[in-house]
Length: 360
Image (cartoon, rainbow, N blue to C red; front, side):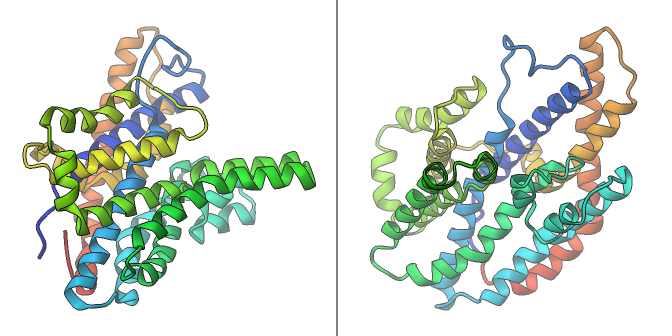
């Protein structure tokens, strides 16, 4: 078994918590309740960037594990890889789809039901057929599509001398692709509908951010000695670079068109430093626990927030209302996610072990 990669659980816990906060405020806004979104003087991190952080972590970790498997066994077993992903993601994903549908009983079209069921919730979003009863599922679809394609690309490029060049080329391609498609539409079709579909699809389908994670995974596995000499020469600069994206994130600093990609690069450096630098340790027992159940927190919380906003009595005392709402949301989300993990997900995680060649 490989050495556990420190810090990733804490980063997942942070990202999941910020998603919950952001969605609480969105649901309050949708229900006409005073919220942070409508108050520009209040500062809180953007939940969308939490998903970018999740994407970079996923790209990094999957690539690292694929490289470790290749080093250990000399090959990549695609069947085992896909079974590991299915057993980790599908059981909870489909349970939340089912619960959302049963609890809220929406009047959805067939395509609106089928696209998320077929792991294409991001396509449903692009077509404005979003599951508004569980919109957070879009990012799970993006990761699943990445997991289908990336091992095939990995097997083609991983043993080539210029593997990093291929990854960089793919990142650039997926970064420029939406601009190219919009340009083609503007020249030949001039369709507002096509423009909207392209914009909505690529707003969430951030394969380039996942690709940035794969790049740092390659660097971490194959070039860490060289990278360490550059990044870790001055501890102060290392720590500053590690903290930079989180400071910018907290103060809602946005760049123009490439904001997500710039954040993905900064997150990638932070992940590398946190995992590799011996003097950086952000883990503790609480964040490791929350990181372990972060997938459940991410998927369950939307249902919980909607029900609590609907049924917690409103009051003019906003401090009291927010204290009760946030405390209840976090407590119930953590409790349900923990119960789900130990009584439901663990069964599939134990099955998943049969298909593991390396662990983290």
